[in-house]
Image (cartoon, rainbow, N blue to C red; front, side, top):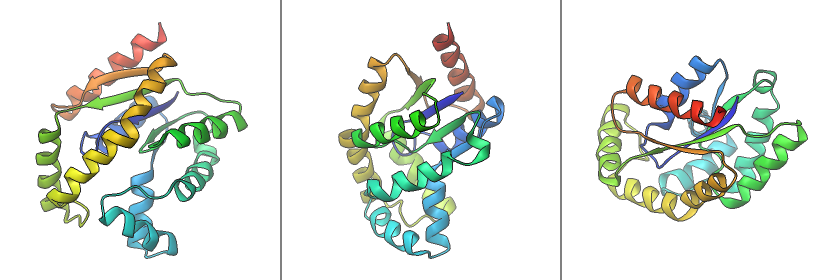
Length: 190
């Protein structure tokens, strides 16, 4: 299974990615985790990425594309993966298509978690207090929601046209949302 998990910031992609990857027996590949690790380690990439992340903006495509290409070339992603946080822009869709084609693969599914913006803002504000995340002030959270709506939400239409998209309500208990996603994936299989 090669799938994307999409949705606005705060929709629960990271949480669901871990649960679903475990259930499906594939690695969860999160660009957010890669960026945060680089920021924590204060690598050159991490310092550059932090500037964008703290402003609520996306890290530039060329940096993100190279990281994803490298990660999907690793052995554990050979039989499948769950990609969380990529692609985020229309040009990245083409890059991902190229990466997959280079390996003789294609996507099987795109799951979009959906939730009301105010619910997401509240969820992320609570998370920022618990996790101490500097990129989660209310102003930055609302800006990230706007950036998602302008730059990433249009990708859902592309994947819907390809017959790969299923939308799932991302609000509820973790296990409940996971079961909704797994049920939605079955609708694509047959």
